[in-house]
Length: 388
Image 1 (cartoon, one colour):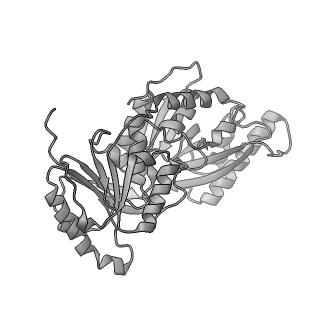
Image 2: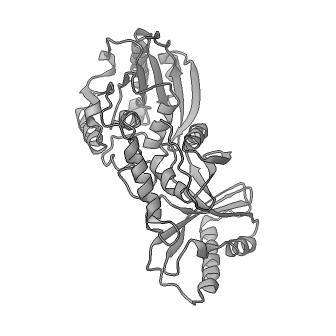
Image 3: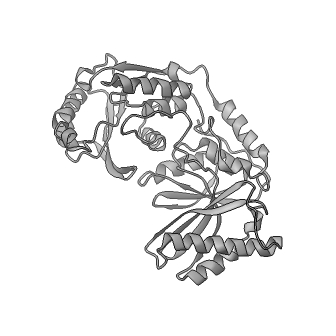
């Protein structure tokens, strides 16, 4: 369901949403579905225009963004002197109160003359202090109030400085306190599901379900549960310029979109009973355990009587040498199962370079990153079911 934007009389701002490399188009569509205008799409980030209410709505509803950054300013700087001067020209007093605790949480730089992250962090902080000292007419700051973490991104000498409104990354929905050995991030799982034509009325199976992330994310989508419903955000405390009402409005909107009566056919299998226990606990924490059936079963024993279903899965990659030796047999079994289920659509994310050799040639392949691991999203598209 698309979420219709509620226009509010608040000033226009720019927000930046970082995401997994290769999945910018998915995030762009999500932002447009929220009703916001895209300003720029770059590798690993999408910038869009919003009102202040968009800070709460973007944090609450975007399933594929890693965090939401409030852009304070952008400028060109190739020396530390320029970095200091331009940073000091930004209107920090509009965002940070006199007692606010502010620091540069992260600085990243690429293809730029300024490359020392610690030096960039130090100089930006000093410039902020100098600006705020003049505006508040004080000689020092207690920094006993709410936190205002700052992030600096420099690409080809173009500096972008932002406030981190999310705090804890958005892939931490609040339901997955327990994980299997190599979990897929919630944001990546949601994005990969969105790359498929799966809808909540279609069967979805994950035969290597691990801690259950694919199935839980699918259940939340089908039930209309906003990914930010069960967590808090850094900017909730920024009442000096962001009214509490914006968060209440976003929470009310999320509540209205929930479908408590939805029914879905979601199934997760894994050979490890301990991992399945984690998956069940995570699903319960996300309040979707009634929508997912988990069962202990190996891939070679997998079958399903119904046609036109979906498989979306994250099988072992073989990061350790002893695991790698077992991959040809494992991926051969996956290929055998896929051949038998010829009406199904199958999707596999893997970094195993010989995956298609054993599974079969994919209809489409998309390059993605699972954390720092470069992977492929192999898509085996089945036929559309006949019209009812």
